[in-house]
Image 1 (cartoon, helix red, strand yellow):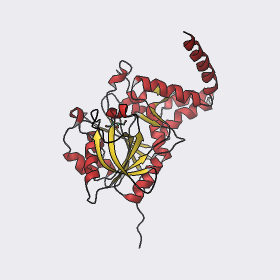
Image 2 (cartoon, rainbow, N blue to C red):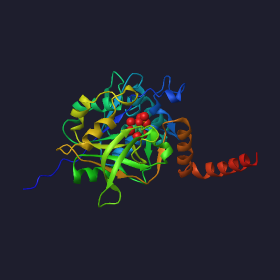
Image 3 (cartoon, helix red, strand yellow):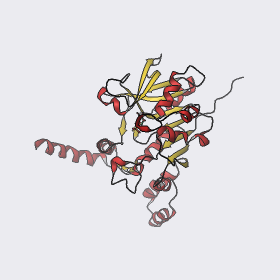
Length: 302
Ligand code: G1P
């Protein structure tokens, strides 16, 4: 007799960070709500989870994160005003975010790092594998990554991280993986992980980008993981232990992503993400590109 595996259906999105890099914009507004063109950054992330058939989304939030809950909830006042005006298009845009997924929220309380944020998901997730999506990384919907990671996890068990080859000068900004190839070109076995390695200590130029499909055994490891880099409980450190184990909780695989990724984590990258995404929009793109071409030409003459 064969047993059908329970399909992975839960996504966890840590969103408790203070967003200090965007002050003063983030003094009273969560950084996840900053618009990328005309949608808050966090909506792209929830849409990505839903596109990978993860319709149960748990956000790990903290103080000052109420606007996140409001964004994914109904807004009857706005909806009735738009209905009265007959503005169907805007009404649809308002309803889009509340109809996306089943949303759940838990507060992290003490912000003790990404590993601790993921540990807060344990009562909701239970004993099934689950996905983690970090809000600072946006993955272009035309280059699906999460679906491939889920498929790899379902075949190999254990946990799966998303990896991207970066310029070696940038690897100190990321978790870094030591890897060995597998029979599949875009899948590697992860043998070690280092969180934000010091120059000269990175085992490779393969960076962990913010997508994970995790075996629930990560919770037991996280509950014992000591504060690491920056005095925080690091998810990378817990995964390192799973990667090195030969026990029933491993292995850790990596899916190598070569598609389009937009970083919204710092101000320069955030601006670049907005320009790139605006250029690609059917409604705004044509006008915006033509303005941008003129603007760049003028800048180059200076
Ligand atoms: C986190 C992780 C790091 C990962 C990165 C991806 O770091 O700790 O391993 O490479 O996300 O964006 P953060 O950027 O939150 O400091």
